Each structure stands twice: as structure tokens, then as C-alpha cells.
Image 1 (tube, one colour):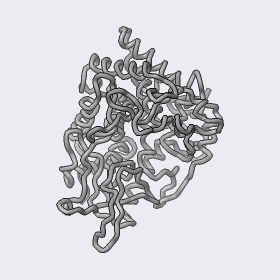
Image 2 (cartoon, rainbow, N blue to C red):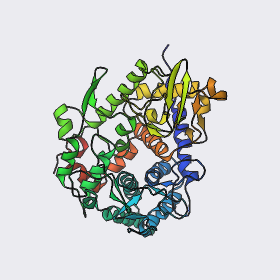
Image 3 (tube, one colour):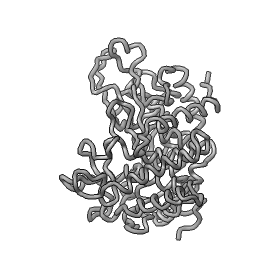
Image 4 (cartoon, rainbow, N blue to C red):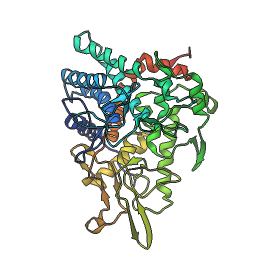
Length: 434
């Protein structure tokens, strides 16, 4: 008997409840959003970018008024624009980029975190979404547009190359640039698009080519696709960019687009769960989703004679791991536009089989039916918290599936369009490359 699909009413509730994270957890004084709901969690600048993006959906869905969204957006943009930029300990960022984790109250750098190029990308993506949406000729909405553009124009992408062809992952005042660069297919698709579109410090076109040369094309379970192990890689850039019908050189050669690639990646995830090579409990046709998520570890347990190692928050991955039996519902939800025919039954399965996984902000981050620890052994482990990085894509990808609203909004963003064209994208809604 096949699994029923999640109803429209239930999907509506999931979207509304999930948006509550940004509505209720954000600091109204500065617009900062916590990385997660654990006590004392710092702000994640990626979560701030997702909050800015979701406010546009919130207004459309009447989760908050336009005036409330304008106030929240303006507060956030002003905080980042006025925050100190420099190499000192009190700086919010440097060269137009921002530290990954900030103190929720003061905005000071936390945990000696890196100046993050990818998390700044999501922050700027949210700002640009706000600039597109708040298009009225009021003083506040004009200021949103001015600030968003100024923040974007301040980011020095050329500096972030650190003399190389590909963008550095980040920088620390104590030690300089990180060792690693953005190589291999990843969520950096949005990073390169925004970096290429900059009117002030644009990445050279060759940087995109240098990046795509590091791609890996694979065939798994009879499905050919551009490989990346964690499912979020196939989703996060797609939150902002509608890749249907547009192609760069890499995808033109293979006769597909990145949207189709993400559809295939979603099916590969399901096939991996069906095969369940490591024999974890509950994996199957309607129980899949391996991505960046919270987990029950670090711990080791002997379960049914097998020594199992469990991890905490980790970017889980197929085929090569890490995979410790942890499933993230948000991984399935964020693939909704690509493969609703397998996502909606999975969501209904999560609802029916693990009702305790749903709380005030929708699905909790993750669960692990295999993990056993005393009282929890019958049902396994369920994450206690919510993460901003999960919540944003849930709200936005449900909307892209339902109406395409957010994709339509970002199609009008001149910087993003310019970046895609400079990367060599053409066809579909984008037309011919200039």
C-alpha cells in the first residue's frame, strides 16, 4: 500500500509554523537571528539572510503585516551597515563580509569564528530579496533598497580570491585566509553568481570556470548527476535561483539544468535509503533525507551486535558518509519543488510515524531511530532544537513549490541576473547571455 501524500492544509500549517522561528526568535533590537534554539546560541548570519528572505513570503501569506516586515528588515540592514568594519576585535566584519557567528545582543564576533564568504552570501541574498520586494516609494522602503544595495556593493569579492582563481572559504584576523577554497559542486553556486554580478568588486569570469572544473559527474543507482553528498548542496542556491530552463556551459554539455540535477539528486537520496547499505533502522522509500543536521552524538553504541558511531551536528552525506542513521525532515521539504511526488509522501510518513518530531516551529531538525540510550531506545533520538538554516529553506521552498513567488521575485534582481549571465547562463527566462 502506497503512502498518502501530505495534504495542502498540512503543508500550509508546516509553512506557517516554521516561519514562527523567525517571527519569535529574532532579536527585535538588531534583527539578529539565533543559529538554533539552544540556550545561549549565537546569531548565524546565514539565518539572518534567510529571515530577510522569508519576511517577503510572510507578508504575502499574511503571517505579518508589510509594516512589521519593513520595520524588521530596516532594523536588520541598519545594524549590518552601521556595524564596524575592520580587523579589530570589535568589528562585525571586514571588507564587506561578516563573521559567521555573532553575539545575539551586541553583534560581536563569537567563538573566534571565520569571516565567512558563504554565510555572507546568504546574508546578502536576503538583503537583495528585500530590496526587490519592498518597492514602494515610502521613506522606509526606499531606505531598504539603498541599504541593501550598499551592503552588496561593499563586499570585496576580489579580495576574497586571495590571489587565486577560486574564492576563499573565509578569513580570520589572527591567521589570515583559511586554507580551503570553494571547490567542487556546492552551495557556492549562489556565491559565484553574486560575486560575478558585483558592480564594484566583481569576480573575474574565469573564477566561475575554475570552479566548475572541479565538479564530479557520477552515476549512482542508474542515475547520472552532478554529485554532492549532502542534500542541502542541491537546494540552498535553488532557494534564490530558479534554474529551470537556464544552463551554463557545464550543464549545456550534459543536456540538463541544475533544477533537473537536483531532482535526480533527490531520487538518489531516496534510492540510497531504500538500499540502506549500513542497515539503519527505518530508512526506506518514505524515510530519507541526509544532509547537514543535528545528531545524537558524539557517542558510540553497540546495537544488535553492531558497533555504531554517532555524530553531533555534521554535514551528513551519501554515498561515502558520514551517515549514522540520522534523518533530517528539512532535507526532504527543501526538495519539494524538484520531486513533490516523493517528497509529499515522505512528509506524511514523518507526520504519522513520528508525531513527536513536530512542535511549535514545525519539524524539528532531525531524528535517529537507530540510536538507543535508555528511555529513548524505543523511539530512538529526536533533536530538541530548531536551526535557522533549516527553517528558512522550508518556508521558501514550500513557497516556490506552491506559487513560485520567491523565484519570480529574484528573477527581477539585476545583480543576480548580471552574475548568472557573466557565469555563462542563458536560455529560458534569462534569454541569451550578454
